[in-house]
Image (cartoon, rainbow, N blue to C red; front, side, top):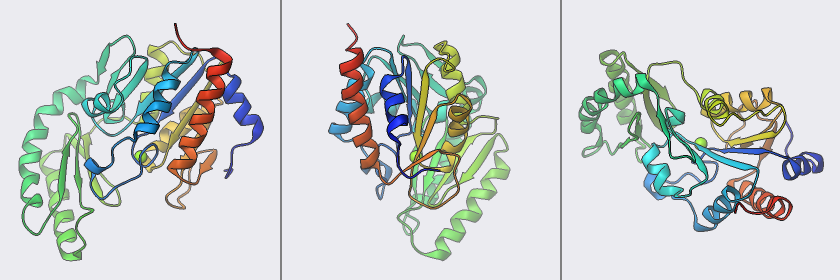
Amino acid sequence: MQTAISESDFMQIIQAKELFIGLDRDGTLVPYKLTPDLAYVDKSVLEIIQLLTNINNTIVAIVSARGLNQLKKDFPFNNIVLAGSCGLEISYPDHKIITNETALQIQPLLSELIDRLKPLTKSKHKAIIENHGLTVCLHTKLISDRFILKNIDKKVFALGKIFPQLKINKLETTYEFYPNINWSKGMAIEAIFEYLTLDFNQGLSIFVGDSQADESAYEVINNYKGISFKVIHNQNLSKAKILLNSEKALIDMLDHIARMRCNLFGKRS
Ligand SMILES: [Mg+2]
């Protein structure tokens, strides 16, 4: 892993005849906040993303655990790929939306799950439920009492037994409930390449993420001889080739890429 981008990698990104830029949202474009609703996309970041979507030979995809509806509100641009719920639901620049069939079948169970999670949001518990449409998250960031956290952990994993159609990812302060199917952000990237008939043995692909959920995406990008970046919040081992110190380091890099590629390739007419 490198801790800075080399001049030759940077020039490869600027000059790529076809460039795919995959970006995670939380912890990558947007710093984590105490509650998910406080982590909105800054206006200056949106301007850079919008410029990138308008440049010839450049494709931008947001690949996030957030639901597609949220991503549509956040990034209301024409030429953008939005992969919500880690790509279980992908909207393309031609306005076509492709939803994973199995996830769709499992979706009705999520309201039942939410009803069972609700007591964990009341009084002393203070957990936060987020319904992403095809997935559900339970956040415990506002809770510091170890006894309450242990109790929530027990209840969450008991729910896993009631809903075998769902799998539970336990992150630092979040439980993610996903359809129990073989799916990852890496598979979402492959699906996007296939739909858009992108051949990245010719062009260049990059992806930027920050968490364990992004590792599968780095792997796919590396296989296509692309450049994978990780915004570092911890020292965990990663398959990403290049580490970025902060969200700000990424935004500065994207700003440079946008301006230099705009000069070289021009805007879409
Ligand atoms: Mg993230």
